[in-house]
Length: 176
Length: 295
Image 1: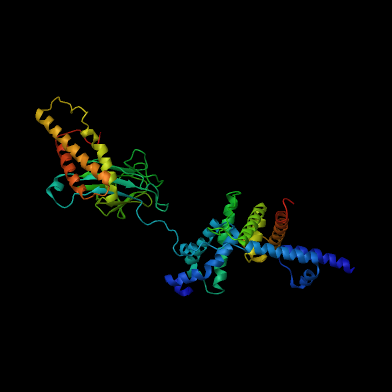
Image 2 (image 1 turned 120 degrees about the vertical axis):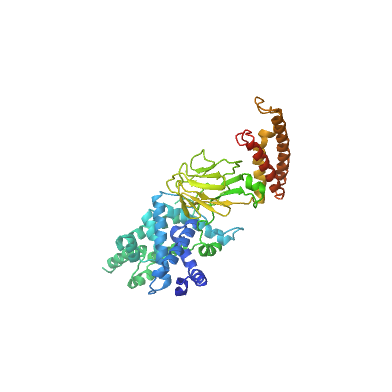
């Protein structure tokens, strides 16, 4: 499939995108959080994949290679956002039109609380945590960010402590 | 001693849990210690919550396959009514430039509505540039203040570069400041970086109404019945009579154009009106009548 896509075969490329766009989407979405940026990261990832398909050596799983491109795009997006200053994270649930069911509503509330709590974290802490949840080990992240693995681990720990504290306050009654 | 060991291990496990990489040897502690067990469960919930991302829009897949690309079409267009065929009228009469439309935005930006709609009658040159005084102002950094000009010569319309910084191209070939490049329908003039103007020879039906409205505005001068006749000094009665005739003709043309403007789609009538207008303009030019354009 890769070879055919590389040769410029449209159907093979469509097949490749079909097979990989959802994982790329979830990773983008879980890292950059808001729908719009996640879409941009997803599209940009596949643009790069298409461009670099000729450089793909074929060793290692294709999904790993695509994910590493996605990670780089997502990290870039996070950094761009940091440079732009504390921009409000747009919170949308993506559930679309129609009245959401009760379960969806609960999930939505939880997600809103989470977004709010995430927004309170320091940028590095958030990055460390979200990338971890997207499936990266501290070693991979450390290499990508140019810091020691222990730094990633402590950032992650700090992020979790703060998040739990924030969310505990939110889950029970008002305040904490 | 045992208890101290437990406490040490307990703290270590808590930290390792928070850091996210618990060595397999310590799993036993998590399963027996209620505090660490609760923390592990809460962290697992948190992870699930973070990973629980909404479904993407179904269109996203299609958008990945067909990425938003810079539009390849022209950024603007120049429309001219070309004399159709080598009829005697078109051989002797000048063609009228009827409409110049330009999208001020550079290609790559979202397509906006045509920003300019300009009607030029007669032999007036069309200036293109970034300056506000241009006939066809194009607001783009790569376009010089005075960038290019389209002139009528005896044998057709020509485009010239006005020594612009980024140059002018006609169908991809560079146009020099001194050279002559004839413009014909179907050509593409490019100014600056990628600002392309399609030269079209036909007037699309929906535009006919707009053009007609512009013509009415321009004809207002000659057809205004309250306006005194052109200065009498040095003009014969014969000329006055002809001017009156011209005015009547203009009024008739205006009425026809009003009809086109009102109906909007009756492009059939347009060539006839054009022909008569062209004839009239030829007479006016021949007699040294004040330019219609200056009104």
